[in-house]
Length: 331
Image (cartoon, rainbow, N blue to C red):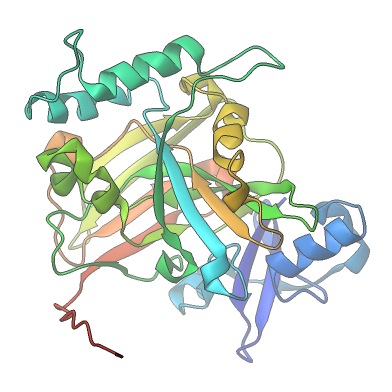
């Protein structure tokens, strides 16, 4: 079962359950966050709770998207309590583009490897530890909070100071921290971990800046375990034509880390185990249009799809006007 969130025709929030080609409204549900909290309180799963509450009218997903009524598949009543984070260099082949960028800037280590390639090799060697042991920690970055999440179908804003507006097709794990401070996995979703690759290429130490951008995920939340093999398509549309398309691979069969290892190294920090918080954690990618020399333009449309995750994630690019930063005094 997959879940979506949307505004109904009365402007009220609702949740839909997707089963194949049919989507039905979940009775008595206004948010996935509320469903998850109720499921934890009842010591049951979200699927069992939905079965108990029952399903109502059929919903037209395509119409929701066309009318701009589709929401991200999970959010938080206070957007500041939703974390968007991620890991890099986690997929087989993911080091190639990064290594090429950083070689050009001379960021070599003592054994003549770039920092990126060195970290990638660390993952290959100990990113999939045996049960009961801890593997090597991955590259990690902070992306933003709920205020940076763009709903499916809506424009992703690229700031006026950005040097690039590039997609990153990824899988994100979705988590709720329960009242005991334990992370509870709700499921997985497609994600566009939108980034500024030109800024990153200037110097690897600019990676943190390059990741502080908006993002989008969904439209559907896939309940259950992550498939071992994921093979989707990432596209860029311009003026009604596909100007770039490439498959992207994910799932543990195509990764140098296990999902459990990536989860451990995120949630080992007490900061990320505050009850009630939502975490959207992106697991990385090996596919970028930037690596193929593509430079996006305003109004280009990103499209990321993979059949196991339901509807495609589509977002156009919008370049923001310059916003002056004025720091005032209160003393």
